[in-house]
Length: 218
Image 1 (cartoon, one colour):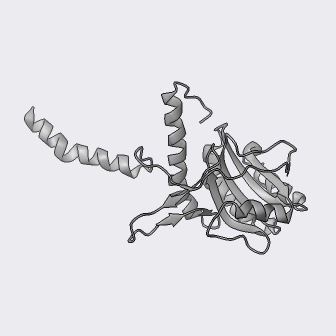
Image 2 (cartoon, rainbow, N blue to C red; image 1 turned 90 degrees about the vertical axis):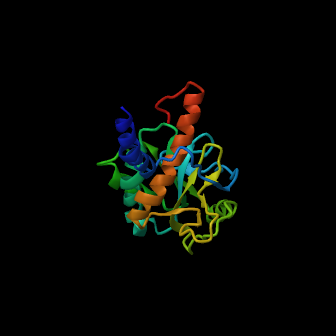
Image 3 (cartoon, rainbow, N blue to C red; image 1 turned 90 degrees about the horizontal axis):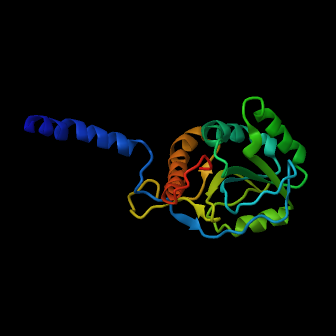
């Protein structure tokens, strides 16, 4: 009996521990707040006419810029790596802020995704150039929008409207700080963003279970 226990401790337990920590979901990890309590959207028009707000939703937030079709590959990357995997959660939305006048281009993106994706949680909202810049400025990010008011980065915003990311503390860390995820690089979405996204979902699942209200909402 003692021999079996020793063998278990020496060989089985380390493997189990490795699989747990390699799974990408670390229940002892939280995703830091980069910018707390960002402003919600104004009374902005959406592509499908419904009201789109950040409050009480987990949001993947993007900025298309005026050249939205030139960057359509980025939306396909995000759709394949993140959206299709988690689209079943009711409290999750993907929101892209676009300049007024790009409605037709945004509709083309949705039409291209719809044959193989349930696009109900893809939301494109439209605002003036000034409104977009003002909204982005209050995020207090290190990165900047390009001349077309777009960026290939997307951002994770939690239900309390906190923009979340990575804040490293050790100087020798490769990823000391991360405020957004580059949709141009599928590997970044599959690795860094997916890992961080799992942490956000774990937080809310744990909160729901604690309140005895674990549902498909998260």
